[in-house]
Length: 386
Image (cartoon, rainbow, N blue to C red):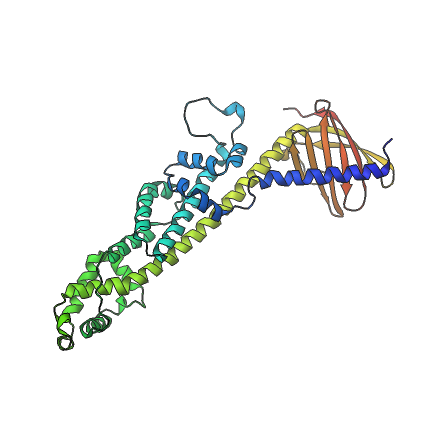
């Protein structure tokens, strides 16, 4: 005969062992998506994705444990030489969207860093990546409009290809700036309307307006300039204005826009990841219910009062429970081990059980938040009709 003190120890040992094991199953699949680590470690993988099939393949590389969990049932897998890993059709769209959002986060972060560090080589790499991914990203994330960022980046690339004059003091250049501010206040670096002008007319239209401003410059101010400045071509003043005045404003505008795109992509990625975790939990609960399904004779021995309580429990498919019918709030199953959590208005009961005798018996322990604890012996009376 087992002494009560031993049973208390056994009860708590089983509960302490079982519940962390449930938690580890979720932790192995990163219940909190670490996007920063993914960007650091998987940037090359995400930049290479240009199709849904490649998105699925990269998903299995980045999230191998989750990929195993969302595979289709074995009976539905078709043997073939196709190299693309298969996942359950119910989550295919979620997987593709997750990888697309992560890819957007990678290039937005890279673009911001390249702009901040004035790294033209990194921007060129991004252009090649975007050209390859553009069509797929548009299909995968139709509500995410990336075109304005890249249109602005192309303009910035043209801006920064222009030469800049080194003129610490330049009366003629100052006269040109004053004329631009007078004729075209929308081109002031303090305003953003010039960006709309560039988007509508291109850099050629912008340069044409600046050329008109040069023609209106007060030449008397230029004549007072030093002789070396008098030889400078008007084109150089215009290019210097674009490179020195407009390019930094455009770069700052693009960094802010890229940050917004990145933030939205990461919020969406976490939302999609949580949807995947919910699907996995639902599948596990459905599988557990399928194994538990049936009517059981349930005997609880309360070690607090040394009494037995026998009742009949029915575990049914989720869609067959009626309103108010007793059912577990949580069902977790790993191998032959079962965890049940019952939630009542007055407290919570947790059961840790083990299948035996070809799933005809369940044995284990329970602990109640109101104080009772003890053992459970369950015997299957009827199985569900499948």
